[in-house]
Amino acid sequence: MTKSLQKQRLFVLTIGLGTLLNPLNSSMISVALTRLQNEFALTFADASWLISIFYLASSAGQPVMGKLSDMFGPKRLFLTGLFLVAVSCILAPFSPNLPFLLGCRALQAIGSSTLFPSGMSMVRTNITDGQAKALATLSIFSTTSAAFGPSVGGFLIASWDWPSIFIINFPFIILSFILAIFVLPNTGKAKLEIGRIDFIGISLFMVSIVGLILFLLSLENNINFVAMFIFLAGMFAFYFFEKRQQEPFIDLASLKSNSNVSFIYLQFISINLVYYCYFFGFPTFLQQVLHYDAQHTGLIMLALAGFGVFIAPFAGRLIDRYGSKLPLLMGAATLLIGTALLLTFNESSPLFWLLIIMAILGTSNGFNNISMQTALFEHVKPEETGSASGLFQTSRYLGSILSSSLLGLAFNNNISFEHFHRVALICLIFCGFVLFLAMRLPGNIRLKSR
Image 1 (cartoon, helix red, strand yellow):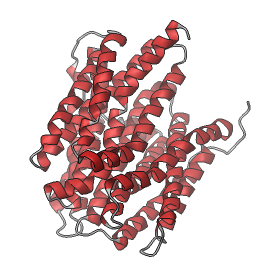
Image 2 (cartoon, rainbow, N blue to C red; image 1 turned 45 degrees about the horizontal axis):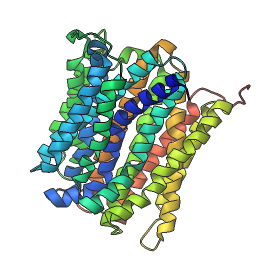
Image 3 (cartoon, rainbow, N blue to C red; image 1 turned 90 degrees about the horizontal axis):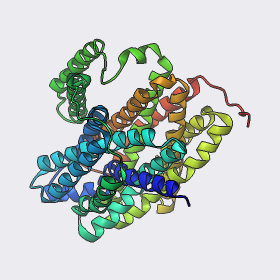
Image 4 (cartoon, rainbow, N blue to C red; image 1 turned 135 degrees about the horizontal axis):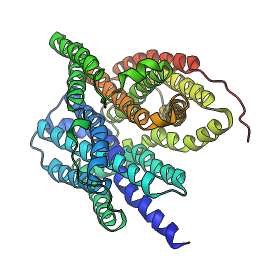
């Protein structure tokens, strides 16, 4: 192995150890929700904010941190992000109440959101030969940590209780921080261009989404019309404000001019709404209805998360050979089939049947993630790839936030087979919408020339 190749691998490892923190911490919380409900005497709707606040802070944090990385240099921002995650993980185990823990989760999300854009910037700048391989390796860090987060969290909670899901971050933080000091290059000047950051647009977006969450969570009892007004007024103000910005948080003009891309984002929001209903809903269902402990719940979740990881390479080969349309349809179809089969799972069903259903749903995720991203790049100009990728991530976050709101509404007072079937029925409607959008997306299933 040449010295330059060794240096490149160490470079990618350094960034990978940092970038895995966001997906890892977004998924480990799924197994901890039941324990945190008991610890702080929460309803599921209250606990669901631990999911929503993380994705809300991530959706706002990533575009801001990407621009700050350009201003101050990616290495400085990378080290700062690791420091912020460390602070959040130190404070979280000592949380006296839910608001304090929510603050820690928000800080954790902002810090970990710094690591991806700054890491990608350094890869694009410093790796010319083998850049695609480096990006693929970093993608493996992210997808694997997200997929196996519930299993890791289950073992940790069973052994050392819920604070351990924060403490487990430190080996990654410390190793990545030490390597970053010596391995990552010093680039960029500390020059603040505050006008490049759309703080007002981001604030309007966040206020609107919080209003939507509060409205959705109120649907079961007293409907919060004030929250609905805040959402509608915020979206109205956001739309007209963003239209006038040179560097908007969300480029509404480009979305309007490219309807195919807009439908791709809408489809990806729907896919993530459905998938994360199961990703966050199954652990709570397994613990509170089927009475599995956290450790066994984590193992069972491998059927959902693990199949997505294993099917992704196969989906990639299908895309190379036939284009994105075929795996897109396969992903939509398996998501619909898996959701429909969930309605057959009842009190007399064996666990093996649930594992089969979870495997089908996990397979759909393996198809959907990579085919949606490929379909997006097929419909945007090369110079728009960066902004399109950022909005693609925002779509993922929106779907995740909406899933936590749906679960909070369905599971708030009681969790049973009836409540879970209700969630599945709602998801089935969205699955039909996903399949419809996959069928209408331009593109033919064709054999690509070698």
